Length: 481
Ligand SMILES: *[C@@H]1O[C@H](CO)[C@@H](O)[C@H](O)[C@H]1NC(C)=O
Ligand SMILES: *[C@@H]1O[C@H](CO)[C@@H](O)[C@H](O)[C@H]1NC(C)=O
Ligand SMILES: *[C@@H]1O[C@H](CO)[C@@H](O)[C@H](O)[C@H]1NC(C)=O
Ligand SMILES: *[C@@H]1O[C@H](CO)[C@@H](O)[C@H](O)[C@H]1NC(C)=O
Image (cartoon, rainbow, N blue to C red):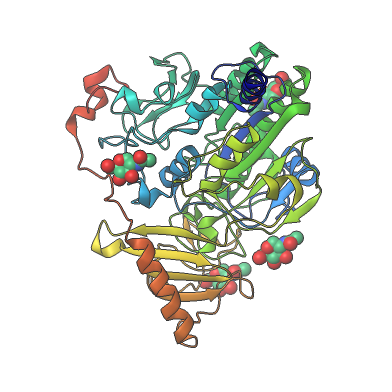
């Protein structure tokens, strides 16, 4: 009797347990694509002037996520994707990591690929990191990726791969000096295709593709710019070409996955990291503001999910999702579970079958690093509160209304204030309810104060001359912190 019970128990454990390194062909492959600075109004399903046939088709065959929130700039959003924590709980709430600052995500935070490796996944990354590199321990292959091909910083020249007088391109740990003159999107796509072609069929694949497009500098091969010959503004024409280059890249990767027989068991998550950057000709109309602001134009991201495992498809999902949710969502899809302590909640049922989101509120950001940019913003139900610095530019900027990199609009730019919106009635933030709804305002302010209690100090040290590429053979390199 006892022996039978023990046998049963052992069998149950064997089925239920996550076996590190075990092979499993039933787990889905996960293709997690992050576009850089892709604006709300810069995808085909929001703007018919934008040519993104591949992305449009994937979005339309899958589920368009219409309330998928991200952080206001790159490093915070990538923190959320990789850790499942709001940046203000990690120390990445203030702006971004700059090349010459000794910054990294503290090592007690587990990264998504580490968790996926424990579940038997092969984990690969191609593209932009932006989560610290001054110490090897902060870099991708030390944080769970089997391979990394890309750059550590937030932006660089698409052809020379240089930023601030330093080369920034690595194949795993090695500096790559052979790609000068080549547009990054081509060779990042080639590497992703190569990973797919060489991938062993008996192992689930996690492929993280944070593309360089469409972050500034505005650069694109001519054939993409030519797709928008009728757009008069040159910057906007190039930006749109960069969007279409991204679209073609995604098409090539998905084609490779089909050829390799991986596609039918692949869950695709596509998201931007923040809104379009107005000064670099990105556009978020009709949403207010853009990248670097807490307005919806900076934080309500374009996103969709796609995959044969989706039970409900071909519709627009309006459930509340935040960037921190991808960590537990992807883990659950992979057969694992995330720590209860993280800020993210799994949205797997939301994206697979349209079930209501378990999320009812989130923090846009909390940052008290400097007096002039002190800010706090939260969403609770239909309401949004912004207190302090909302970021610039403000306003509702149309794509055809940019002159010399500045929005040509009669936009007021108070930058600092107190705003209360009902986003259900007013998704474009035209009507500040702070004066007309004093009780609601107090309630939201009290809630924000509660959130602020768990704010950790920003990781934002002064410039460190030890970082300079001249000390490291001309490349931005780990080893100085
Ligand atoms: C990591 O350590 C910091 C500093 O002690 C702490 O505030 C934070 O909660 C820890 N995070 C995790 C995920 O353990
Ligand atoms: C996509 O694949 C085609 C065919 O191989 C190639 O000509 C094109 O350059 C690729 N595009 C990108 C963005 O990699
Ligand atoms: C463009 O900006 C000008 C100058 O501020 C303004 O008068 C005009 O209404 C704007 N046009 C659009 C389409 O927003
Ligand atoms: C997407 O959200 C916008 C703004 O909240 C809303 O107006 C629109 O109806 C939503 N789209 C769909 C198809 O539900």
